[in-house]
Structures are given as C-alpha cells and as structure tokens.
Image: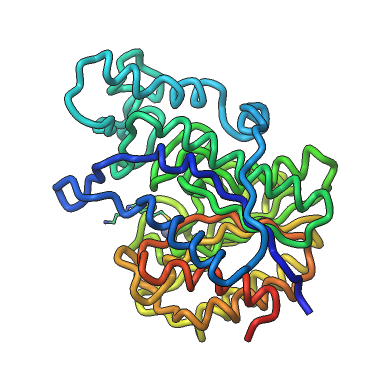
Length: 348
Ligand SMILES: NCCCNCCCCCS
Ligand SMILES: [Mg+2]
Ligand SMILES: [Zn+2]
C-alpha cells in the first residue's frame, strides 16, 4: 500500500550555488545545474500535497568527513577566496590535471589544487558554492535522521547534487556525495548493511569509488555507456568491486535510445540484488536525466515511467532515503521527480 505523506527536506540556501558559467563545447554556457531545477520540483511537491516540507538541521562537517578527505573539505571551503586572492578575473574552473606519467601530489598553487581536487572542467566554483554544498549535505542528513527515526521514506531535495563526488574529487556539478554521506550515517548508527541504487542517467562514479573495497555498502548504478557518456572513465560492467568489496558493486550499462521497457529490466536486476543483500536501509540516488527530453542525456524514459519506477522501489520494502541528483529538462523535472514519490506511495 506504500506510504502516505512522504516528507521532503529542502534548503533555500541552495540558491547560494549561483555560478554563471559551465564550460561546454568550447564556450561558457548558462549552467544546466540551475536553481530552477529544485524550485520546480518543490512547486510540484506542494501542488501535489506530497507531504510536509522541512528545512534541514545542521550536522556540521563530522558526517561529511566520514566520507570526504579532510584536505579536500579544507580546499572546498577556501577555494573561492584563494582564487580571488590570486587575482583571477572569472569563476574558478580547473584547467590542469595529473596526466598519465605525471605526479599526483597536491600543489600549493590554486590552479594546481583545482586540478588535484577535480576530475572534470564543467563545474565552476564561485562565492556561495561552499555554503550550498554544506546545506545540501545537511538536507540529506536530515532525511536520514527522519528515516532512522521511523519514517518509511523521505525525499532529500538536494542541490547541488553529489553522486559524482569522490572522497577528494569534485566534478559533474557535485561537491559532497550526499548519497554516500547518507549511507555512512546509517552505518555509523548501527545499520549493518546499506544499499545505494543510483538511477541517474550518469554513472555514480563517486559513490562507486567511495565504497569500492567495502562489502557493508552495496553500490549499484544504471547509466549510459561510459564509452559514450559522462563520466567516461568509470562505470563499466567489469567493475565489480575489489578486496572485501568484490561483488558489492554492480554497473548496468545501456546505449543511446534506451526506453523504460529495456531500462526497467536493469532496474529489476538491481532490485533482486538488493533484496538478496537485505540492507537495513536503502538510498536511492535519484536523477531524472533519464527522461526522453533531457538536454544532455540519451535515454528515453517517459514521465509516466517514473510512477512505475517509484512503485518498484516501494515493493522492496526497505526504509528509503531519496537524494536528488541530476535531471536537466527543467519543464518536466517536477512531474518526473514527484512521480517517483507518488509511484512509491501507490499512485498509478
Ligand atoms: N555537455 C554535457 C557535458 C556533461 N558534463 C557533466 C554532466 C554531469 C551530470 C550530472 S548528473
Ligand atoms: Mg546512474
Ligand atoms: Zn546525471
């Protein structure tokens, strides 16, 4: 029967993430990861009376540092000020990386540190990025606390997203890995096993990397073939975990044009693996850039498919936190994201 009144956690501080540039195709465009994405979802949450909307509690950097390296957190906090102090005219954009055969040590210079702590160049940093990333982690942690206290499922309407962020790398519009921070919080509160299912169009490379050698957190991602899609350099099906974590990472990869009828077979495979794992809690890294009209992706899911998706997740029966990840077709993002929650609640 699903649940009634799913709570949503939302922070107005997401607006502090206000970069004006995204490097794309050799020019600086208006960022796809824009404030209207979550404002549109929030409006739909309210118009559909999904349930109560709460602002986050503050958890500090402790839970963030259970996932992210302290030097990386330190870098993010001071990056913008260091960039400005270096006299740079624009927004902070990495432009140099440790290429093959070079030395992966942390340089002093801000240009070097931007490259050392990132894996991609489309994610500009400016004033307010740090505060918004902290607020987004608090949104996820508030949802986690509500579920640990008995809610069946809570929607963490996070912005900026997180699933591309590694322990010490930003990129793909992500800084703190909200889904990973949520899973680690469950583990730190005594949940023996946690599963993270990444349904975003893109591979959850950060989430995979963070838990890759661990068997206590099962990580699964459905996504566009990395041969053809961001993040390009991780997310292939032969990546199944390492050491203790061997067998606890699963990548399910699809080609351009994949419709729900095919994609949902991967969802079924993922659900069966999660059921077998029997986690105490489930984290869904929810991107809706799988949508047929998404401007930067190549799957063909339709709005009604998100109702079916939500229903299937509910049938797993686990306490669930949804962390908002990607989705760039802003006109339909509200219907698509809230359809997942309403499908979870039993709406046909
Ligand atoms: N022109 C498209 C480049 C895409 N680069 C980053 C995509 C990040 C998706 C986050 S869910
Ligand atoms: Mg994915
Ligand atoms: Zn994505």
